[in-house]
Image (cartoon, rainbow, N blue to C red; front, top):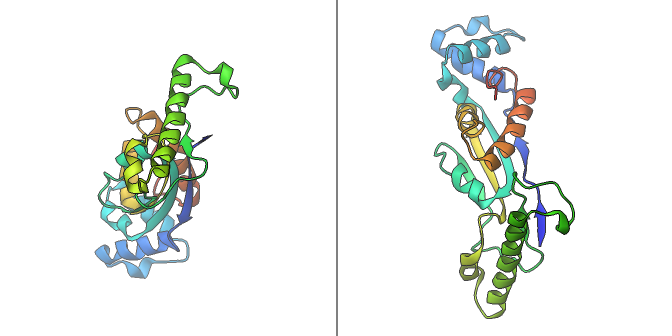
Amino acid sequence: MKIIKQYHQILSLPENGLQMLEKAGRTCYKSEDKITHDSAEKFVDMLVRREHHAMIEFADMIVKFVTNRGVTHELVRHRHCSFAQESTRYVKYEGEMEFIKPVWWSDHSDTQGKTPAEQIWMTSMERAESDYKTLLRNGWKAQQAREILPNSLKTEIVVKANIREWRHIFNLRCAKTSHPQMVELMLPLLKEAQKKIPVVFDDLIF
């Protein structure tokens, strides 16, 4: 059994994203003649401030998340996204299984330093791994043995969404009322997106 921390990786950013958003937006106003080499950022900032968010649907961002299955159960509720997720039906976990470290876990590195609750969690994960492999050895297929796998099981999911939908995701999933595991995953992504894509996420502060 291996315990790992969750993380994200941006796979694709919109190419010439602000310029594309400006071209789309200026079609509404028939102001294409005002496009210059540096006009996009100011124009897109205006779109965001006026909440003309339909225009920022014309740029996509693709992100890969390594997290637990409980978090992905929430992520796939966002209907305006495309998803590709590691399948417990087809993936057979025959080697060392990975589980995601709960965000509320202590940072003790040694087993003796764990709290009673943390010890219970570790024992449960070890038992799930052991029982899963026992079922495989007894002839069950991966799609059958997966019935005993917990939410803490590590999974990978690729998510594609347009900028408007990412704003919606960040607003919901970075809020204090969101699940702590989700917040820990989404806040670093938001901060990276704010650095790499000007203007469109700057007003989102948590």
